[in-house]
Amino acid sequence: MKFLCTRCDEVMKLAGAQAGDDTVGLTFSCPKCGGSFAMLTNPAETTLVKGLGVQVGGRSEPAPLMEVIQSSVARDTENQITWDPGAETRLANVPPFARPMARKAIERFAESKGIRTITAAVMDEARALM
Amino acid sequence: MRMYHEVAGDGGSDILGQVGKMMERLAGRLSLIKSVIAVASPKGGVGKSTVAAHLAASLARRGARVGALDADLYGSSLPRLLAPEFIGANATRGEEGLFPIAGVFGVRVMSLDYLTGYGARASVAWAGAGGSITRGPVEASALRELLADTQWGELDYLIVDTPPSVGRLGDLTALVPSLAGVVLVSAPTLLAYQVTLKSIERVRALGVPLLGLVENMRGFTCDLCGAANRINVEGEMGETLSIMGVPALGALPYDQRLLKPAGEAGPIEAVERIADALLAKIGGHAAARA
Ligand SMILES: Nc1ncnc2c1ncn2[C@@H]1O[C@H](COP(=O)(O)OP(=O)(O)OP(=O)(O)O)[C@@H](O)[C@H]1O
Ligand SMILES: [Mg+2]
Ligand SMILES: [Zn+2]
Image 1 (cartoon, each protein chain N blue to C red):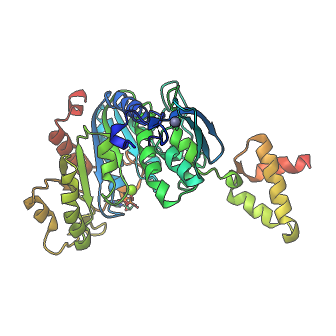
Image 2 (cartoon, rainbow over the protein chains, first blue to last red):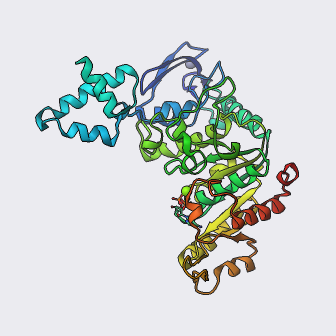
Image 3 (cartoon, rainbow over the protein chains, first blue to last red):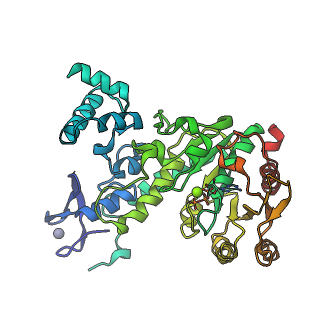
């Protein structure tokens, strides 16, 4: 895309870029009359451009490794931790009303220890601290 | 007012320059790889991943330096077939790229599974607005990054396992103009062969060599009586394809050993023959190293 100042028929110069979470703001100004405007991309446009692996406003540094993949993968923060069958069986012994709480508590414990898979042994460890 | 073509430059983002840099990085990476081979099929479940994995393992066993790229972004299978001990592993980051996972016989495996952080537990989901409109570019970029940002090192062969359908094989051929060719895989059913036939024009139009067809699951040997059974294909479509100029690379029987991770059951004769045929086809530099 190119931008022209309709008053001067002059090419607008990119004056600045500002990136939000899912939007980018670009300001352009006319070198002749000084007139300026901002272009604000909507979330879909932002995703599209990011998906192409280019950066609006240009790049001064080489693109980071696996940039598009890393910035496009939906992180499943809720499901980072898995339960093995042994641990699930143990959890089934907890009365139903208390189960969700117990699950969360043990997951929090596992998270604090950087444990990804909850086993019966992890549950013992957690219980010892509770 | 001047129109687009009368105005020099772009909006200031130097998009063409950025794309040039991307392609430069990719070309640099590919320059260390002698042959990139795609395994493809218009039909799902015919054995692309099985063929890709067992071929990669076979070539590596012979002493070749082999990479295996899982380009089936939503159905990655190579981690299980080539590096079963590293399911759920994350690729480590080096200065120059992400290190592939060392699989059987040292096959260097790369898959989205090693990058998403949720690994083998779920296939990839993309964040961001735009849905189907933005998915295409993201998929093409992901493929480019898997090729360009993986520290493959020097390779004799990079085997690429592709998703079912040849519709987007063009993404790969655009990224790898020097592609050594495409190996087509078909199952012995009339429908699979018919769809394979239809895909040939599509593959040829991409301007890449069609290395040949692997007829997968073509027969089986009876465990009880030892008789070799042929699974019938109403009129030998494999031969029809060869009349159409699609060379046969060989056939794979239905074989329990192919269900296991590649290499685990030792060399499989039918796989070895296909690997030989493939090497003969592309001028096989691996045989020399063995
Ligand atoms: N020759 C064979 N003998 C026995 N089993 C086989 C053979 N070829 C493939 N299979 C099995 O058939 C199934 C499908 O094979 P595979 O996953 O390789 O197909 P695909 O074409 O890669 O599938 P997709 O289209 O989903 O990527 C797998 O479970 C695989 O183990
Ligand atoms: Mg597959
Ligand atoms: Zn102006």
